[in-house]
View 1 (tube, rainbow, N blue to C red):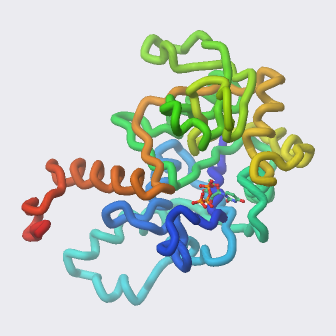
View 2: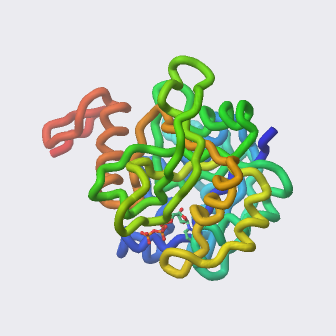
View 3: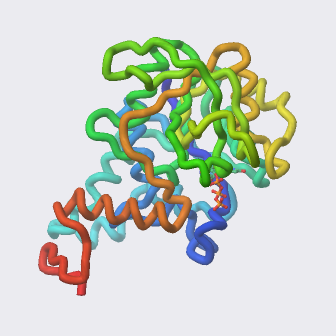
Length: 294
Ligand code: UTP
């Protein structure tokens, strides 16, 4: 049983400056909902109710987002706008939200280690909300929980990435393994190696994206891992140790991911969500609910 979903959100979001100077990257809205809320909703859909955040300086807006705002609620009560807060209010009512801080940016591995008191000694999920994922049926995390129940080991979500971008990712090598169910054919790999941000000769075109299910031995492994790329403690380096023990499965998930930590990915996600909601692409003459794009 996995109880906690961890959200490491202490990063500075430098690719989005100046927007992220005073506003956390995770609070940037795709349409009218902040990235972090999409992440929490995906976790809820996967069965989680304990949300743990590893935050840092300047990230307090995330905490406030998952708290009541009586003045705003009173203001819109009884109006058609009351529905706009229904989604986040439901999350506040049904989930617990815990926060701890990463005092210095020591890398994603360090951020996950800082989340240990929120997780305890049990398997847990990790969501990086700037990787925004949409799926036709079950969400990525829900798909991964089912795989963790089957394999009982760490699961990393992977995706094929073009050659000219692969150096930005953690990249796996692995052997295909039998899939539980025909629709999973070709999607599962027993990971046997990983490289963070390979500058040459990447081991494959399969990159790790921001969804993980980790077994709790990862904490001890991170503690014994030396800083890697950029002088930071990389989760990829710790996961390599688990992979060498045969304890990591890579999963080419069903669905679509947008890298909302980058401006092009963010714009693509926004266009995609607009089309999903309004049934048509946004353009200068698009008209929705009385508004025109002009
Ligand atoms: P990124 O590599 O996207 O870094 O981190 P970033 O700082 O958020 O963004 P850029 O590259 O400067 O634009 C991946 C995830 O890991 C978290 C980030 O918050 C993000 O969710 N992270 C990274 C931490 O929480 N702490 C760290 O020390 C590093």
